[in-house]
Image (tube, rainbow, N blue to C red; front, top):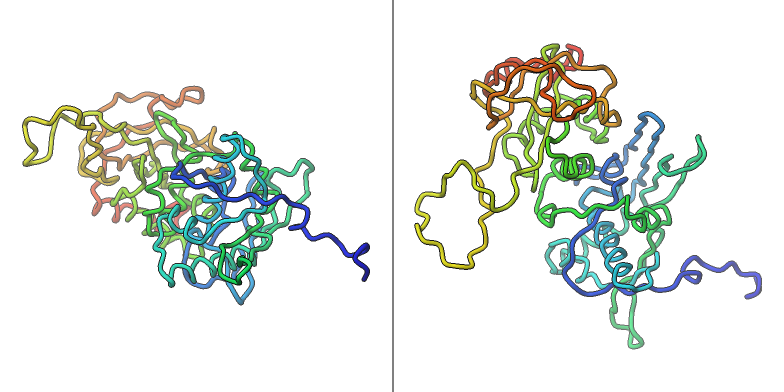
Length: 386
C-alpha cells in the first residue's frame, strides 16, 4: 500500500496533551459513578455485565487474557478526567491523546511507586484497553449504542537514547465528551482513594453522584442497588457486605442508614455528614487540652455513627423514591421501621410527594443489630434481605 493510500492512525489525528503538574482536586464523570461499568472484585472476571433499566442499557465485556477492568483501574480515568478539567480551566488545550509518567498517575491516585506498583499500573492499562463497553447512555437516537474501550490504545515512550520517557494513552471520545461537559463531572473526596473495598468504592461514587448536597439525603431500594452494582455476589452476600459498611461508616462525607419498610422491603438511606468544624453534642475527646492555641483549624474528628442502633426514637430520611427512580423500584413504600442512629424524635406525618424534607410514612421502633438480623426477611420473601 502506498503512503498516499495508507490510513491515518488515530494517534496521527490527535494533538498531544502533556499532563500538567500539581496537586489538584480529583474529578469523576457522573455516568461512571451512576452505572455498573467495572468489576468490584480484584479477582479475574470474564463474565459480562448486563444492565437494563428504563432507557439505559449497558453491556461490559472482558477478554480472558486480561479480565474485566476493575473499580481500582478506574482510578486512572479519574486521573485523566482531573487532568483534562484542570488544563481546560487553566486555559490549556486538551486532547484525548495524553502523555504522562507512571509516577504522576501513581502519586495522584495515592499508590506506591515501587516496581511492583509500576507493573500493576501496566496491567490496569491493559484491562482498560481490552474491556469493551456498549451503552445507550448519551445516544440521541433511541436504540443506538456507542461501543468503545476505556483506553483506545496506550504505549510506553522512550527518549532518543532509548531510555523510558513515560507513557501515552488515548481515552475514548465517549469519555472525553462527558468530561468536557461541566454538568457531567463531580469533584470527589481525595479520601476515596483510601477506600479498600470494591463495594464501598462503588457505593461512595453512587452516593456522591445521586446525593450531591441534598440536605436530607436520599434512599435506594436494596434489590435494585444489587442489580445496579453489577456484582457477581448473590444478594445474600451483597446485603451482608452492605450491613458491614453501614456499621463501619467508611464513606467520606456521608452517613449511611438501613431502613426496613413495614412490608419488609429494605432501603439504604444516606445523608451528608455534618460540616467540618461544627460542634457535635458539645463533647470533646478525653484528654483534650482546655486551651487550644490561637489559629488552630477546626477539628474534623467525629465518633463514627453506626447505621444500626438500640435508640428508642428515630426520624426517617426524606422520601425520594419517586424522584430517584433510576435507582429504585417504582412502587411506593408503605412505611418503614427505621434502623438509623443518632436522630432526634419526630412527630408522625404523612409522606409527601412534593417535599423531600417531609417525614417518611410511619415511624417504627429502631432495632439493634441483633434484632435487625433476626427481623430481616429471607431471600424467599419479596423485596427482603437474606
